[in-house]
Image (tube, rainbow, N blue to C red; front, top):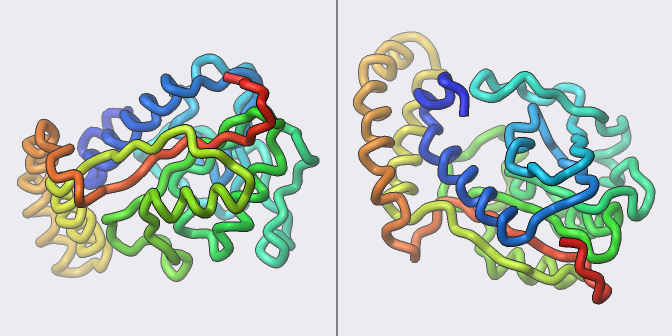
Length: 238
């Protein structure tokens, strides 16, 4: 993570997310090629060390985040993407696919998973992450919060087999993330709200680091999830 990311109001949730993605990739390694859907600046590219080709696609107007590297998409969605939700790739174009923090923004989640399955080869993995306890963001395109049970049903309807699910944090991480996330949004209002948020922020930043050793307490409350789904035909492409 960059030095800027270490003092971000979302440090805790991003740190825990990267830890969970890393655990998922270790459990189900990816070799060959991967397409990252909604990739932004490809902040998790370094967590896939065995890939020969890592490519990403996003909207031309994707929101750049100064906390991340200066990566950029290799492709952009076509102008009619939001009408048909079809990815601009042939069937089986990649060995694997990923969609990190994307599923909650897609109005047709079942179709999204079917498209991910379509563009990868049999035996390939799909790496997903999505928030569960998290403030509204990127409105109005913030539609869903899924349990792992819901994503398992969606996966099965798309012909995908769950390999595993990872929870990024419990009740402590969720509470701290809600506090710091709302403080960041308070800051973005401008005016006196901005100044008050700046005064309070050092304490909230410290709270994230204090919470880190306790981040996984209380597993009935989930901060976010990571999953690996596999397109099966009896061929193992790990």
